[in-house]
Length: 156
Image 1 (cartoon, one colour):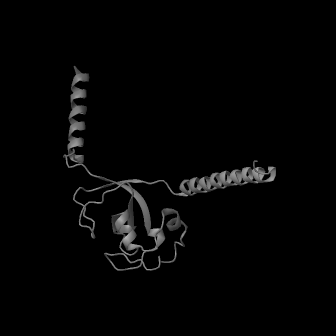
Image 2 (cartoon, helix red, strand yellow):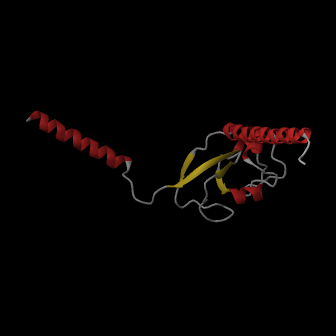
Image 3 (cartoon, one colour):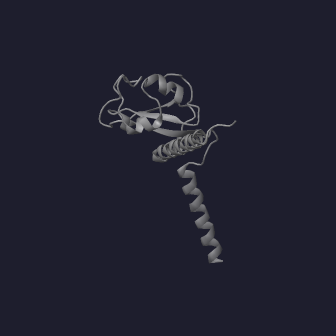
């Protein structure tokens, strides 16, 4: 004896509903990720020190907090950022916060001023290389010498 036909049909319907719900939830997740702004790449001096951890910010995604008054920027990794902003759950919620109201319970650790969502952004950080680069003056001198040599060759 098997199950009645109605029970089998009901089981198939429930299975299909579960699959549809999963598809919809995945679509919602994808749209939330797509709504996030592109993550810019920032090059910091190799001697930059995070004021809390006292080391260079490491990680794939770093959070930049800009001081509203002075414009100074500090960079924090996700763990440190979560300690600063206790209500931080994900990037999308941060993006959806009212930009004109301070984040509740969040204070900039350097200035102790409130943090506004419009002054927070995700970035990717890269250290400036320590190898010496040509200065602007050296480039100008080099181009002037090349022009002079080209003139001499053209005169011959």
